[in-house]
Length: 277
Length: 322
View 1 (cartoon, each protein chain N blue to C red):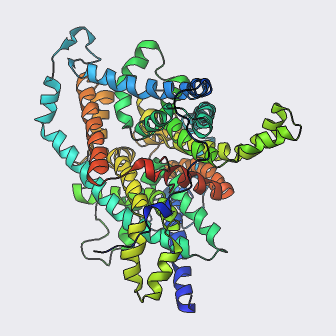
View 2: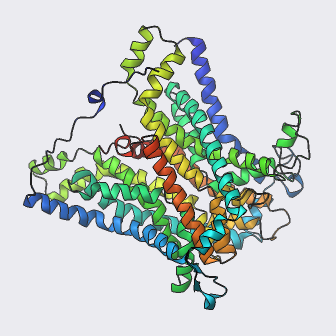
View 3: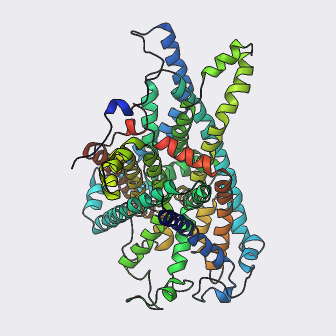
C-alpha cells in the first residue's frame, strides 16, 4: 500500500468516527445548554449548565423520567433473559441435533423478525385491555419476545454451530462425569455466544418504541423511549428540548458502555447470524 | 457483463461429518423428539406472539368496531378494506413509506459499502476504534436519534440553518418541518445515520468472503480498481448484498419512531405504520386499524416475495443453512 493510499484510508477512518459521533456529540452539547442558551443557533453552549440534568433527575420531570428508566431496565432485562433461555435450548437443538423441524424453526424466526410490529399492536391493545395486561410489565415483556427471540435464535445457532462439541466426549473419555464435561468444557465455550446474544437482544428491546407507546398509559410500565416521545407532547416544562436531550444522553450511556466494552463480540454476533457463506 | 466467481464446489464448506442414514432408526426418532422438546417452547412463543395477533387482526378487520362504542360492533365484511383502499390517506401514506424505503436503502447501500471498504482497509491499530464508533449509531435508540436530528434542524434549537446559511435556499428562518419534502429529507437523514452501520457490517462480512485469489488474479491481468470492484468483488458478495437489502427494506418499510418524534405525521408525512397506530391507539377504531395492519402485513410479505422470487435471494444459502 502506498503512503498516499494509506493516508487516504486513515482519512476515511476518521470520517467514520466523525459520522458516528456527530449527532451524539450534538445531543450531549444540547443537554448542557442552559435554558437561555437553547436557541443560540450554535452547536456548542456558551456556558456549561447542568440545569437539564437536575430537572430530569431530581426536579419536576424526575417523576416522569426515573420510573420510565426503572421500567425500561426491568422489562428489557427480563425479556432478554427469557428469550436467551428459550433460544439456548432451541439453538442447541438446531446446532447439534438432526431433526426435520430445524428449517421450520429457523424460517419461523426469520418470519417473526420481519413481521411489522404495528400489526401485532392493534390486536394486543384490545386483548390486553380485556385481560388486564394493558399497562403492566408482563404486558410489554410478552410482545418484546417477538423482537428478541428470533434474533436470539439466529445468533445463537450461528455461534453454537461453531462450538467443537466433540470436546465434551473427549473430556468424558478422559474421566470427567457428564456434568463436569458440560460445566468445564461446554459452558466456557458457549458462554461468549450467549452473552453476545443477550447484548444484541437487550439493544433491540431497549430500542422499542411502538409497543412502549401503544401498550402503556402510566408510569407503572411506560419505558424510556415512550416517555421521551411523550415529554414533547406534555407541556410539563416550557421548552422540552433541553431536558429531553439530557434524558436522551442518560439512556444512551448504557448502550455506549456496552458497545465500547464488547464491540468485537457484537460485530461477530450481528454478522454471524446474518451472513454466513 | 462477464463476472468472475469461483465454481460452486470450491466455495461451499465441507459437508457436515454426520451422515444421514436411510430410514428412521430409533436413534433418529429419539433425536427428533428431543429436538422438538428443546426447540418447541421457543417455537410456540414465536407463534403465540405473532401468528395469533395477526389472525386476530384479520378477524377484527371484518367488523365495524370502535372501542368507545363496543355495543355497536357489527360484521361488515370487507368494507373496512374498501374504505381504506379508496381513501387518499392510505395511498399518500403508502407513497411516503415507499419513498422513505427506496431513498434510505439506496443511500445506505452506497454509503454502507464505502464504510465497509474503509473498515476493511483500516490498519489493525485503529480498527477497534472504528468498529466501536460504527456500532454507536446502531446502538443509540431510534427515538434519541430522531430527537437529535430534529433538534439539529429545528428553528428553536437548531444550528443547521446557521451552519448552512451560505447554501442557496437556506436561511436563518428555513422551517425544515414546515413542508412535506423538507420534513421527509430530515427523516431520511436520521434513518440513514442510524441504520447504515448495520448494512455496512453485513457488507463487511460479505467483503471478507471474496476470495483473495481472484483479486490477485485480476490484478495480475491488469484490471483497474474499478474493474476489479465491478467484475470480482461485487459479483462474489451478491448474496450478502441481497440479504442486507432485504432486511433493510423490510425494516425501513416499518418506519414509525422517527415519524412519530419528528413530524407526528404532519404535512403529509404519515407512513403506513403511523396510520395503523393512529387508527387504533389514537382513534380506537379497532376495525379500521386492524385492516390497515393487515394491509401493512401483506405489503411486507409482497416485498419479501419480490426479493426472493424477483432477485433470487436465497436466504438459506446466504445464512449458511444449505
